[in-house]
Amino acid sequence: MGQGKSVLIYSHLIIIIMELTAYLQQQYTPGTAVSYGREIGIFLSNYPQAAAAVYSDLLGYIGVLRQRYGNAQTLNRIVCSIKVYYDYLCYTGQREDHPGRNIWLRDQRSRDVQLQDLFSASELSMLMGRKERFKALFYRNEVLIGLLVYQGLLIGEMASLCVAEIDLEGGTVYIRETAVTNSRKLPLHANQVLPLSAYLEGARAQLLGGRASEALLISQRGQPMQASDISKHVKRRYSGLFPGRKVTAQSIRQSVIANLLAQGHDISKVQQFAGHRYPSSTERYRQDHVGRLQAIIDQYHPVK
Image 1 (spheres, helix red, strand yellow):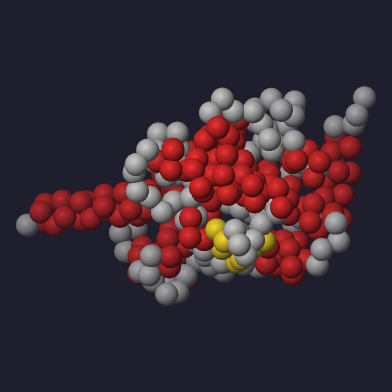
Image 2: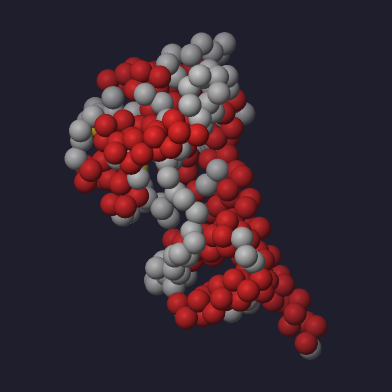
């Protein structure tokens, strides 16, 4: 009887992990999704009642972790993973409250925007118009990179976009709420209209090859592009374009947000544009903050 119950609990845990894995792959980069998934799996194995935990339960669990791990980075990684687990439960409607939302470690690692990874507006424009052997892929790639350069979307948001959420006549794109961002409607840039029109009117159907899908971004194999596909595409396509700096979907988004603030846009407007839940998330991109980072870089990595 006891063994049968253990098997049932284990099978239920496997199902949860599979569903959670799909969620993480939609919301985060491949490496982050794997890291979060691993830590959440350990958390659920050690704490079978985690789904019903309250704030005090999590504080007690973290207290045990503090006795076991002395490295702040390790602790923060585990705590972030636990909070993502409850993001998932709220996102899927399994919970209405988030018991870990207000838990922050005093020894948390820096969340500073890395100045060396940022790109100017003129550098971002260099990402557009790259040659492609197949015309259908050219338009798909222009649409994809345009959503990064002009709207600064997260890869999870891009993977979730549907054709119906692009309004060419109104010149807008609607981005649905995710676990980490608010929903919003953003204007399309003039440079996006032609590629989007060509993609939606012919290139997308060519890539689909007769298959049916509501997804906006379609892979060369005719399947909706996942967040991991978008991340790999950006890294591969722009590798080596800026020697010494990596071009990633994250660094492009960060650059777009920082550039808007540098241009004098009101921080509340930039927060709305980026979909940030909290003003503090946008504050990290202020130029006085970035300037402080520049001073640090100049001190420790002076230009010879």
